[in-house]
Length: 490
Length: 96
Image (cartoon, rainbow over all chains, first blue to last red; front, side, top):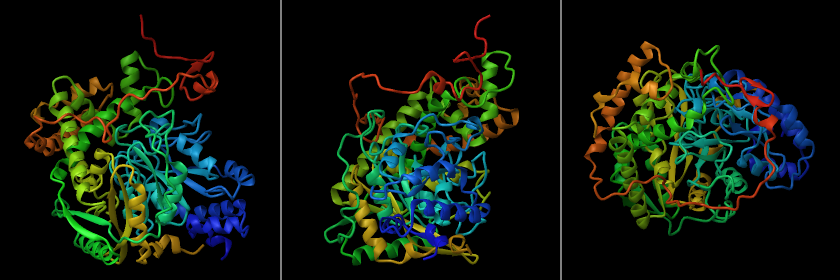
């Protein structure tokens, strides 16, 4: 293969080439740089890149480490020492991370090279990446459409062959939804499986870091390097980290897959339903047993999510006060003017809307009616999953009700944008793990738009959902399809 | 459930220390009223026997030894400050 084709490789294939010394980590980075320069004007996936620092790391990279010499793109919400970290927000323009997040420390220890930061909805609030204050990222399958969000830059970079793999964060679907819309694998780990230290907080009881990759194996490789307890994150779980690749290749005999009747809702695109139904048949033909399950409180998920996520966000974003870091309004006349204008001028519209909603649901007189009630219904949603998992090993559904929508189509209707998370955000509320894997295409006006199958697993059962996703993936050709931008001339 | 008509965006923006333009205030009033109306369905659920869940995974206090370790220097800690002097954050005047 020619050097210019390198960025099309999976991480697993790149690793074999590196270990056989057919390419050097430096050559890999240089081919990636050329690739990014050629496609970036079409997709705008990256917000900052530091190739010089990356090339230095490449000089000493040990290719025998689990991810030795593999460049990984990082969502711009995760701190990488010395690199900018904007969260897609004006309020953090010019901010440079003084330290590495734990996930970055762990990836570096495994030999990976975090070379650049990807675009996102401001503070991870959105499902299209249109809420970035930096720029609008486009979907490599159809550049008139969104790549999904909030990890849309990570998704677009990998789908365009401009990254081998990327990290995203998922608070209500922000890894799985862009993975689905961009034809990728996206894994949201169980709450507590991956450290959140050094990841700028949106909703602390929901946020998790996870991989967006071309294949299930690549996702398992990144997870094996990144998961585990962290003394800096008291919500990280102490359980030992398995080798997530160990069950890949095992068949599905005896695996029980639940199909929740509540997910057969109106408003699902018929092409999405058809693809997901076919995928369920395919899983059955691979030996899985399909069982009906019920998740009776599904319909309340969006409402619960938007109360809890905005409440936590309004508290977390209080730290952006223009004192210790970030933007500060000019010549404030007093402290209230300083806070009020710094935040007015620094935050974008969606962030403001959510701070207002979150502040309201936590305010005196409304806290019990909104926030506490939402936490109680959250408990019921969690119990729904506990009961469902007594009957099955994993739950399958569409990742999103529709394929990628047009840029600008939903920016004026926040509620319609929120409903895009209907199948994903209950997993965050319940703390369980979930993965999206490509399962077909919808045809819209001549474009092929990827469709994702979501597989949800019990807390800490990542090995199982990776096994199921891998068995499905390897029995289909969907993961071999490349986006028009990825196939573009070099 | 409280009625969504109780929402006063102008008042809440003061609580949040977040100035809004009149136009934003009007727009959010309408959009958030729609969202609160959508969320009224939470009122249908019988939660009388349910404990609130703060996390998806039940968690309790986690303790560790309070051992000092190398961390940011003062210079690194204030490296991103919008206004600093003598290794200190310079803040807007808070007392007369």
